Amino acid sequence: MTKKIGRIILIVVMIMLVIGLSLVTMSASPLYRTNQWVDTNAMFSMGRALASGMVPYRDIVEQRGPLMFGLFAIASFISKTSFIGVFVIEVINALIVYFFASKIAAFYFDNKNVASVLGLSGPGVMVGTHAFELGGAPEEFAFPFIMGFIYLAFLWQRQNKQLRPWLYLIAGFGLFYVFWVKYAMIGALIIFFLYVGFGLLADRNWRGLLTAVGLSLIGFLVPSAVMLGVFYQHHALQSLIDVYFKMNMMAYGENQNGMISQLVNSLGLFAEPINQHWLITAITAVGLVLTKIGRQRSMLFMMFFGTVAMLVLTHFVREYYVLLLMPFFVVALFQLFAWLINWQKELLRPVMMLVMIGIFVIPFYGNSYIKTATPRDAHQPFLARHGQPTDQSVQERFAADMHKKSKHPSILMVNSLDSGFFLAADTHPVTRYFHLMNMTYDEFPEMYNSFSDTMTHRRVQYVVVFVPGNQPLAIDMRNALNGVHPYNKAPLVKNYRLIDTGYQLLAGKPKNWALFELK
Image (cartoon, rainbow, N blue to C red; front, side, top):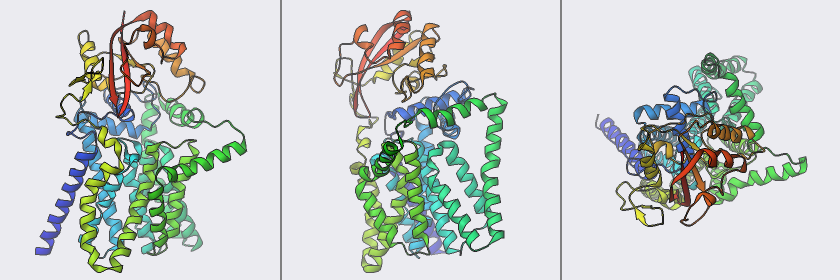
C-alpha cells in the first residue's frame, strides 16, 4: 500500500514537472504575452475561422491539414482572444509525450520509478532545441505519435512479432491523425507498417498479417472517410484535394531542375538535419547502434531514415521540420543512460537528478527562441513607431486604430504571413486568401490575384503591410509599398490610405509595419 501511494505521488510530481516545463518553454503559456510565431498565429486564425463556420480550403486557404485546423478550433473554444487554449492542447500533447517516453524507458529499466523519472527526457527533448521554436508547429503535435509508434515497435519485437488486435486499430488511427495534420510527417509510421507487414509475411503468419493489415486500414480509412464525407457534404472536397495535395506537391518548393541537379539537391537536403543538429545526430546514431533490446536497431534506423526521406521529398527542410527526428534522440538517451548505469550503478541517482534539472536548464541553452518570448510582466518590452520603448505591441496599437470604427474589423495581410494582427483585433479572416503564404507569383498566381480582387472590390476594411527594413523607418506611402508585389500595388493605393506605422521585434527579428484603411 505504501509503495502504491509512493508511486502515485511520484507520477503526480512528474506531471507537475511537465506542466511546469510547458509553462516556461511554450510562448502560448500564460506567463508570456503572446506566441509571436507567424505559423502559430496563422493556424490560430484558421482555427477561429473554422469555429465561426468557415470551411477550410473552400472558404479560407492554408496549406496544413484539416486536423491541424481542428486542433486550433478546439483551442479557440477555450479562448478565442488569447493562446490559453493552444497552451492547454500543448500541455496535453506534452503529457502524452511523457507517457510514451516513460513506457519506452521501461524497456531499458526494470524499476518503474526510474523509468517514470527518465521519461521526463521526452518532453524535455521536444522543447529543448531550436526545432521547437516558439511552439505550435505540426511537428510538435506529431511528436507523441512518433513516440507511440516507437513504443509499438519495441513492443512488437518484445512480444515475438505480435501485438494485440486493438493496438493495430490504434496505430491506424495514429496514421490517420498524422496524415491529416501534415502528410509529410508520416515517414516513420509508414516504415513501421511496412516492417511489421514484411516481418509477418516472412514468417508466413497469415492470420497475424491479415489482422495487422485489416485493423490498421480500418483505423485509418474509417475516420478518413467520415472526414472526407463532411467535406463532400459542404461542397469542399475538391478544394481540399486542390490545396492540401496538389498545391503542396506541385507549387510549394517544386524542383524543376534535371535529374542530376535534383539528386545533388536531395543529398544536400538529406544532410541538412545533420548540419543543423550534428551533435544530437551523433548521439542518436551512437545510441541506436548500442540498442540491443530485441531487434529494434534495424527497425529504428529505418524509421529514422524514413522520416528524413519524407522531409527530402518536400524539396526543402525548415528548422522546425527536424523536430520529427527528436523522438529517436530520446531513445538514444535512454540507451546511453542504461549503458552508464550498468557501467556504474552509483550513477543512477545523479542521472535521474540530471534529467529533472536538465529539462528546465537545457531548453534555455538549446532553444534561443525561448528568449524572444515576452514575459507578461515585462516593463515596456516593445518598441513604438520611432523605436522608443512601450508597453503596447504594434499589433495592439493597430487593433486600437481599427476598433475606432469596427468591433471586429476585416483584415488582409497582403505581403506577409499572419503576425498576430487578427488575434489582437479580436477578428478572424473573411477572405479565402488572408495572408501571403511562402510562394511566389509564378508558383501560385491565384493567391496574388485574389489579393488584388479583394482590394479592388473593397472587401476588407484594413490592409496590413510588412515594410522591409532592420531599423525603425519613417514610413510614408512610397516606402510602405516597397515590399508589396507589383501586381498588388495599384488596387492598394487606389482604395486604401495609410493611417499608422509601427516597428517591432517579432520572434527576435526586426519588423516594420504599415496599416492601411479603406478610403
